[in-house]
Length: 305
Image 1 (cartoon, one colour):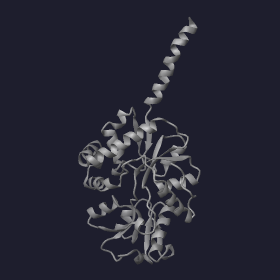
Image 2 (cartoon, helix red, strand yellow):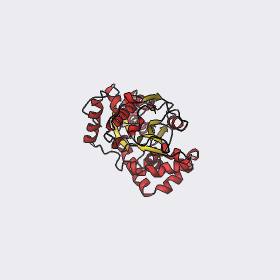
Image 3 (cartoon, one colour):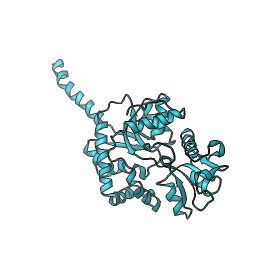
């Protein structure tokens, strides 16, 4: 009788364990606080696309934007948003990270100065102060852009302003800033009556790259990741077809972001989202990896997704 009872209970226990694993939320660490750069993810959530795939997603804003990939590498989160250049460096440093999706498939970073200031061209930065926040990548991009225009890092004074890029430029503490987002800080400056002049990396010697990607631990074979990609693509498609109604739902769900700055950023960012998040352009990744290798920052060829 005892053996028969065990035989009957065993399938139920297995089913219970499987159900628990399936119901467990996927934890996704954002690169920063919730903002329009994350629109496809939140559209997928608010339209029920994750739910249709049987998924629950737990979005977490990090205390430090450098933390998300580290948490995934340590097995403390399932997914994280990071940047293609940083991911290449993180892989070189030994973090077990693989790219699973692209969120924003074009550069957003740029070099900015005041539009009404004396700097009309990049070469005018000679002898000027340039603010930055994230170190190695910013320096590489800035140096490439400067060299493309006949000067170098030795011709400018670098100032670490942390994450106060816009404020540092507006207050005159620096003459230019590298690393501002063309879909946010440029709008922010325009709204306060201090429009910026922007210089784009991809037009000044830096190969094109994916601004935002989603990474997982290389050991993560969770079958839910495939379902996540299906729902994310549905989110992008819906967003591009219904940008304004999607914004209205997002603004209702995140009232702290319901302002003109974020509304404009939402609209401006639409062309930058990857229409197929799972798609990986191997040659483009290899080109950027080789570019970083020439700067002695990473290895070539590019890691696989």
